Amino acid sequence: MHGRLKVRTTAEQQEIKAKERAKKLVMYKTAMNLIFSKRKSGELDDEILKMTGQVLTENPDISTLWNIRKETILKTKETMPDRVDDYVSNELALTEQCIRVNPKSYNSWFHRSWILDQVSIVDFKNEFLLCDKCLELDERNFHCWDYRRIIVQKSKTSLENELEFSTNKIKKNFSNYSSWHYRSELLPRIYPSSSDQSILDDQKLAEECNLIQNAIFTDPNDQSAWFYQRWLLFNSDEKSLKNSSLLSTLNNELESCQQLHDLEPDNKWVKLQVCELLRRINGLGNETEILQLIQQLIKVDPLRQGYYTYLGSKIVEENQKKKISESS
Amino acid sequence: MNGIYWSLTAMDLMGKLGEMDRDGIILFIKQCQHENGGIGASVDHDPHLLYTLSAVQILCLYDALDAIDCEKIVNYVKKLQNDDGSFCGDQWGEVDTRFSMCAVACLALLGRLDAINIDNAVNFVISCMNFDGGFGCRPGSESHSGQVYCCVGMLSITGHLHLIKADSLGWWLCERQLPSGGLNGRPEKLPDVCYSWWVVASLRIIGRVDWLDKNQLRKFIMACQDVETGGFSDRPNDMPDPFHTLFGLAGLSLLGESSLKTINPVFCMPQQVISRLKIQPQMLSL
Image (cartoon, rainbow over all chains, first blue to last red; front, side, top):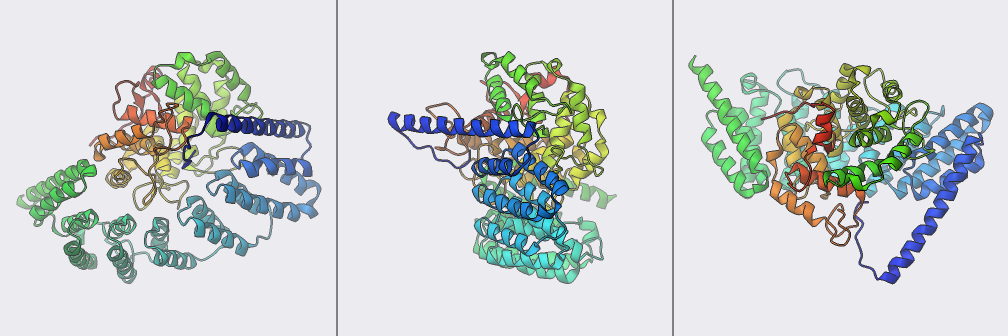
C-alpha cells in the first residue's frame, strides 16, 4: 500500500467499511473459483476472458489471470486464426485500462509486450502514443520507459530518434533523471569516443557539457544533472588526462562550477563537484582546497558526513601514493 | 505467499514466530507446489520464482525444507535460466534482475547453487549496471534501489561483489536520504519505509552503511509506525500493511535495534537462520 493516508474513522464507519470489504471478498472468491474451475475443464473461451478481465481491472497484479488469458490467446491462434486480431485488440484495450488503474503494474506491461509478439503486424504508432500519454502523467514511470525501449527495439526505431526524444524531455524538465539515464545509454552508442580518456566524441561531449550547464544553473539543487556530469567527465585517471582534450574540458567545467559556487556558496552539489574536478585535474596540488571543501560539505550536508569523511581520506591516500611514486 | 513471508519474518525478528500456525502454513505451501516444482502465490495460482523464493524462505524459517520436494524446486529454477544468463520469472518469459536474485537466493538456501550457470548469470546482472553505478530491471533500464538490492544481493551470494563500482553506487545510495531522514528509491522521489531496507541492506553489503545518517533514518522509520495497530506504513500517517511492517522492522534491525533479532542483509531473514544453514554471502568492507 503506497501513499494511502490513514483516515480516522468512527466505529460505525469502520463497520460499514468492513462489510463492504467482506462483500468484495466474497465476489472475488466466487469469481476466482469459477475461473479456476473453467480453466481445469479446458474452457478457455470468451467467457473466461470476460471474467478474468473483470477481476484484472480491479487488481491487475494477479499474474495467474494474465496467464489464463495468454493460454486462451494461444488456443485461439490454433483453433481460430482468423479471429486472432480481434482478440489481440481486446488485450491491448484491457492492458491499457489496467495500466490506467495501476501505471506501475509489472504484469500489465509485460502482458502487453507479450501480446505484441503474437501478431505479425503491430501498430507501433499506437504503442508510442500510449507511452507518451503515460509519461505525460508520470515522466519517471520506469515501467513505461522500459516498455518504450522494448517497442523501440521491435519497431527498429533509430537511436537518434530516441536521443531527440530524450533531449526534448530534458528541455521540458531538467529534473527528469529517467531521461538523463536514457542519454547515458544512447550517446556512447551513437557518438563513441576515439580516445581512451573520454566516453564520447569531443564535439558531442562539448554539447552535453552545455546542456548540463543549463540544467545546473537553472536548478543547482536538482541532483539529476550532477550525477550525469560525473559520469560524463570522470572516466580516466589523472595520468592519462595529461595533454588530453578532456583536461581542457575539465578546466572549463571547473571554471563555471566555481562561478556557480560563488553564487550559491552553501550548495552541496556544486561544492562536491568543484572538489571532484580539483581532484581529477591536480589532486595533489589542490589538496588543501579540496580538504577545506570537504569540511564545508560536512557542515552543509551533515546527513552524509560519513561519505565526505571517507572521500577526504581517500583523496589524501591517493596523494600520498602520488608523492611516493614521484619521489622514487 | 509473499504476505506470509513478510509477516512471518516480521514475527521472527520480534521473537514471536511461535505464535503463528506452523503446520497450517507448511500444509499451505505444499498445496501451492506444482508438478514442475515451482510454487504459486496461493492454491490454484501458477508457479513463479517470486513465490517460490518466499516459500523456500518460510520453510527455512521453520527449518522444514524436508516438507516439500526440494529437488523439484532446483529443477524448476534451473529451467528458467536463459542462454544469456538471465532468468525468466515463469514459463511466460518475463526477464528481470529481480528474478536473478530470486533464483540464486532460492538455490543458495537449498544448497544447490551448482545447478545453474553462475558465470552467465553474473554477466547478465553486470550488463544491467548503469552510468550511476546502480542497476535496473534489464540492460538499459534505469537504476532503482529495489533492483540495486537484488543485483547487489545476487552478486554477494555468488561472490562477485568486486565487479561493482562500490564508491559510485554507495554515493548514489546515500544520496537517497532526504531531510526527513527517510530514504527514496530513485532521485527526486518521495521517501518510503521499504527503502530503509533496499538501500540500507545494499549499503551494508558493499560496506558503506556509515555513509548515511542512521539516527535520522531510525527516527523516520519510527514515525511510520501506526500507534493504533502497531504496523508500519510507507510514510508517516499512511495506512500500515505487512510489507512495510517487515521492511520497517528489517531496517531497524540493520540499524542495530537491540529488541529485534539481527537480520541478514542479503536474504532478509534472521541471521541465526542463515548461520544454521551455513550460508556466508560475500560482504565488502571499506
